Image (cartoon, rainbow, N blue to C red; front, side):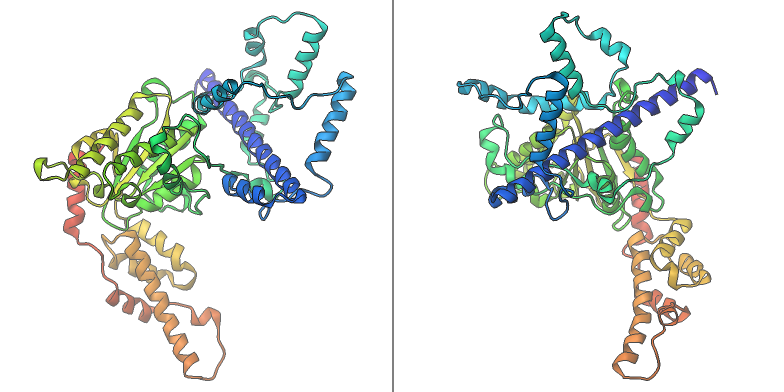
Length: 502
């Protein structure tokens, strides 16, 4: 491999590690500040305020609490003493607000712009010291200017020493590749901190304020437990989702221009092959705001409200640095438009969805990804298919995948020969059907144990023996459980994938 090329890869990896460590440090600082503030408010008796802040930030005193001898008053006092010792003057933490209300309104009107610009600034790693100093204008060497400069340097976050990659040995690079153990369990839980905007910004359209809380309930406030490592097979769908959401956030400098991330993806397959599981895995690993949308979230019986709900959804998604909008059962919302026989309300909501998704493609700096899933891809309107750039077929598990699924579900209570027998008997079955037959076999064994318990038979319960699944249980399960679809339907998905997949 070319040494220059190897060095550039190492530099990209170094920049990503610096940025990730800085973002994690900032997230933990925000969480710690909220915890200290909540503890102070509770000690002062502001219980209603504590409940409101916990609901808005998803940080509660039931999950976190300050360490011993740590409170916000002592932290402020120690900082004031340190500032007095270093600069020989008192620090000013607060100042009087301006008398005019215009300044406050102007500041509130810039909230959305700041949130949108933050995605660009936070995605870029800190510049090297040479470039940073070259871009700053020269400051006069006065006493006031020197003190202001010292105070500015004091508040500058110290992330990692900015050392050129050429000066780092290969041994240090190898050590950085190794994952570092967490000092405390609390540090590992920092990723669950995901604040949501409880109140609409001041410049949010007035006609959409009544729908703000409705869409807000569709935001996932906690990470699901699934991950891509738990997804058996499906390498192509996993790769598409990673290069659409996860990898662009990890290596933002690589996904520019023609290589900008995909804006939309459609997952289609027969029922039970893992479309929703992939969405939950993406929500767990994307570290961004995840909107879980269904047809009931956007449909309303009142005239014109469905379109407003769609518009409110995408406006809220634009408030965050990075967002994922998952629309399950897309065919319920975006069926093919068939002229005069279609209802006007259905046509309006489809048009609004098309306009909003098309707007995402026209704005390059918006990191919003639309993920849709359906069991009937041939019924979806062609205009929506055009806007969903990637249309990926989630295939049924093959023999190796089915064997791995069986091992994951009942591998500790079944013999290897029986696993192979179940694999051969479940050809062209979906992943959920394979899980169902595993559960039926385990339940069949449990029924026999329960019969002994109900009949008050003698003997002792042996966990290793009584939960072991044998040939009899597997045979009974194969007789009871049948596949949820036939081979003809699966061939129909394959043909549609060849004609319209992307």
